[in-house]
Image (cartoon, rainbow over all chains, first blue to last red):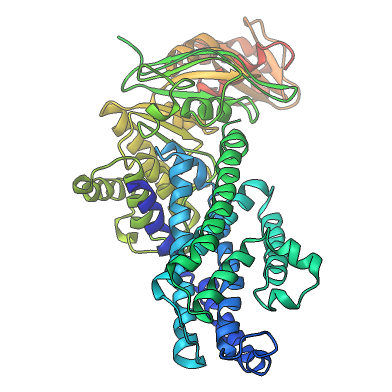
Length: 255
Length: 303
């Protein structure tokens, strides 16, 4: 754990010196939330949310989509180690691949949670977001989302053959998940086959939980199922990531 | 005495290409072993296997008594590797890079500062401590690259062409540091194409060719076994035939092997006889590691 924290501290210095990726992933959703909140406000009743504000729908959707984009920072930090030839040096220094990846997990988790906190705060302070349910339930959901984003990013890194492949897959999957999972448009308005497909995306469970808390006034009990599903997705992604690291990345590294 | 590093019957192939063909090696504590060889001879692969970052095809590597293949984690942290490619973080300062690798290498917090300062001092980086690596020159980055391999005071130090692209001052500092860490007890494996450096280090030398060692020994031993000094005579026109054991003509220069140039130079001028009027110059080509190295490679059939 000490070594993983060293990796986290080291990567935070990198982000402090080159904050543009992180800052753009904060500013862009803020802008999109402010553009889309008035649009959602017009149609909330048609979506079946009579008491909801536009921000109640736009903030969680944008936060979810951009949290998956924030996973790109983890991918960047991993591929950077290979490009700078430091992966080998770090490993010879005594750090295991797992320690190194745990450091990247901490980095990703920290960034996603920071991003979500800022977006929900901006939504509440400036756009009229009203969390009717338990804030604790919201926090638990956001932590589960962060776990899912991080494990998904690691799995993509382990499966992709190059940085460009990893980012291409990331864009496609994130956009599909966001739309199909109902983060941008409520799932009830979609065709039945899309609704069936939605349940196999983590975004569906995340947005269901978030709407339950924000609009439906849900507490911890109401988010048990979404959180359990998000953690199940996270586990699958994590298993893929660590399996591929030990069988592929590490094999390549050691071959 | 048990060697710090022992390599036995090491083989390694990449697909059809066999890079290492049964390499045996033993290096003691405080010893510097220089591995010489052409590009593709297998030097980098050998170092990677020793460091535990590349799996061997067959054979065994024991570092400090530990089988690297069976327990790679047990030796990591006790090895310092400066690979051919410079591996430092451009977005971090000199001191941040050294601290990071020192921490990962297991240096205790209380000792880290002193260790980092010592490396910066030895490599002339103290004045650049707060400089971002992306603003350093190539030579300064090479110094830092080597420093990152040494900051955790490893017992086995693997330096793969550490002076490539380095200026003379950097090269001098690095060689001094290598000598110093060996004197302090570290086992150093050093590869380089600059044979003058190896002579300066007065290292034991092993010549690697086609994935196996052709010969090894201290610089002096290799030179005495494989190289001889020569008198090099230049004439106006073609060199005359001279009755001298081993005499040969190369590029219109008459080369006469000698073990005592001071005496033989007079004999050679005398033997030139009537051709003396055409003699333009006499030079002494001293036997050195370079000539020994080329002669060792020439002795390898198929080259």
